[in-house]
Length: 103
Ligand SMILES: [Zn+2]
Image (cartoon, rainbow, N blue to C red; front, top):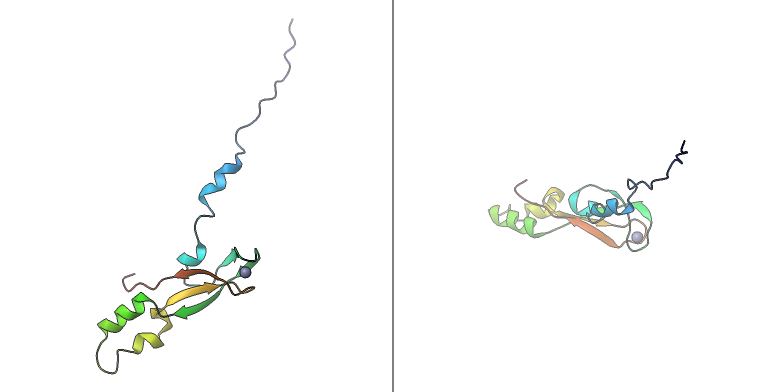
């Protein structure tokens, strides 16, 4: 009669490298709204401050609307601007959601 010791097989399920795919994506680049993210400057988890900034889409929209009197309209419309994310803690720019005319 043989005693079989329960062998301890190390499980391969816990692989810390599985998280590699996340983290490369920048939430701030994908959302026009404030996002909660870790600032890579001060390492604080904070909600970004979003400020509109005239971007390439704004200028294209301006050309489309180049009717006298209306050409400056996109500059007054925050929706037509890039949304720039800033760290609410250290004010560093963390990302930019670019305005695109064709959504
Ligand atoms: Zn910061």
